[in-house]
Structures are given as structure tokens and as C-alpha cells.
Image (cartoon, rainbow, N blue to C red; front, side, top):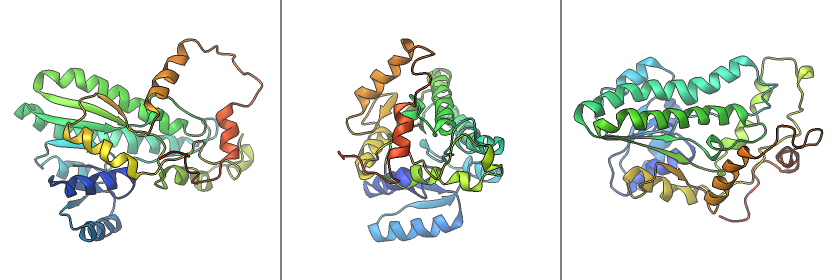
Length: 279
């Protein structure tokens, strides 16, 4: 079962798994997404079981816990763009409710059935910013950092029961997801005059890759072709991510004070949906 399969990378991965003959439950947030995915599956000639699973809804989670699931991919998530100093509290809470609390509560019911039968696999769809971070994606990155800790902990706790845990860390892919996150300030219930940043001038601070490049890598993790716990599925970025994650040990707390960070400058410079030069 893959949650968040109504759009983006989870959508493509669900269809690819079905095309390879796997029995897939594609969880989508709402009924319009169900109809859209039905059309996609029909056009590709694949068989997908489509279910409404809003991970924040107890009824949906309880219903999913009754199904026999060998592999759970926690893909459902949203992104709240904006600086940490500006994002309203209710939006921060919503970020964690969808990306962390809902998936964990969904996982609990399914994981207990895996424990009982001594087999199963649980995959958390994290992000490269679950390892690093970036300006104006901090709330999203924080939720993914939380998933990393949850996955690390569950791997230790469920090891003796034969339940495998893995994490997928996609980089910036051009699915519309990232750019949509930078529209969220339009709906904030705050006084724009109190904001530190003008979000009409900012965009997602990274160039983005063709999403089709990620589908095969995600399928490799789901099907066990990749045996890694952490899987960075971004073209040519895995080594760079590892190197950058080590820099926090030597970086000074006052480094660059009084100057604009390079990635902030990039957020001003880039246009929405800027494609990466490699694919």
C-alpha cells in the first residue's frame, strides 16, 4: 500500500509497481483523486486497487488497519512554504499532523499485524531535506527530520519481529508539489505587514529534476532490490548530500552573519518550476 498516491512521486511509483505485476493498494486523500487515478490506471492498462485514505482521519486509518498489507509506503505529505519566523502556528501544526502524526498512527495498526505474523516492510517517504534543510522549506524539513527519527527508532524496536524499515529520500522533483508549497502564504491568517519576507518575490530554492527519473529507484526500495536503510533517489546528489550532512560539525554559529545566505539568494533568483540541467 502506498499512501499519497493521488499525485507526485507516489502516484508514479504506484502505477509503475502495478505495471510490474505487483498487487497495489493506492491510497489517495479524496474522492476526486480516486477518479483521476482510475483514469490513469485504465490508460496504462494496469490493475490498481484505489482507496480513500486521508491519514489524518481516524476512520480511514482504522479501515486500512483491517487490510493484509505486506509492504507499507508512507508517502502522504504536504509542504508548507515560508520562513520559520513567519509561518502561523496552525500551519505548522497542520504540517506535522499530515506528515508525521497521521502516518505514524496509520503505521501503528498495520505494523502490529506485521509483528504478529513476524514479517513485513515499512517505508517512510522522507526527503533530502530530511537530512539537510533549506530556506523557506524549514517546516517541511522538520517534519521529515521527525520521520527519520521515527524510522530509525522503529528499525531497532521491530527488528526482532522480522519487520524491515527503510527510508526513501527524494530530492527536488518537478511534480508541482514543491512550487505549490510556495503558494501557501496566500492563505495564511496573519497580517502580511508583520512578515519578515515578501513571498511574492520568492520561489522554491532548488532546481528540479524530471520525476520519471525517480520511479525506478523508488520501486527498487519497495521491492527489495535496494537493501539500504536510507535511499537518496536523486540523480548524482547522493554523495553531495552525505558530504553536506557532515558540515554541521565544523560550521560556526556566527558564520555569514549580516550577509544573505546563498540559498536565500537562489530563492529570489529562481523562477517557479526551474528545471535542473541534468535529468
